[in-house]
Length: 210
Image (tube, rainbow, N blue to C red):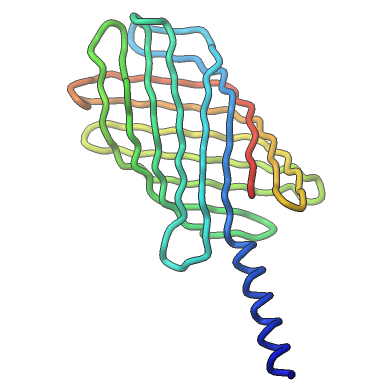
């Protein structure tokens, strides 16, 4: 009987641990971004970005995250760029004081265009990192997320930093986020395109953690 109760308790604890370790996350942000490039500068316009992530407790196998951003301004003579980041990362630290994720990203640039020139697209590898530090007893926290690379004569970075407020609920957690995001892509003969595209502005978003 004692062995049966011990086995039952162990299975419940194990299931609870897996439930805590498994997570599906999604976010949506409204970004008031200003785009700049050679001979082009746009006023700030509302753009949208979104993310989706899956985390698990299986050792050695990384967690997976997708990050999507679409920018278009100025019509056919303006500037446009769509980026999709496929990110593999590990939770290096995950405790009451700090959350730290580190990994690698493969970034796909699509529908890139400046002025009346031809469109360009292609892949580039990047380093990835994310950090959150909660402010004790407040629900607030400070966070940052970034990708960066210098590859094949092209350089790129995407940095977001801000504050969030965590609403802890029985079924899910909701984070309200206010941040500043800065992106710079300095392409050198990237799919036969050379030039620097910059985007920056404040964003307001929500992150849902199931």
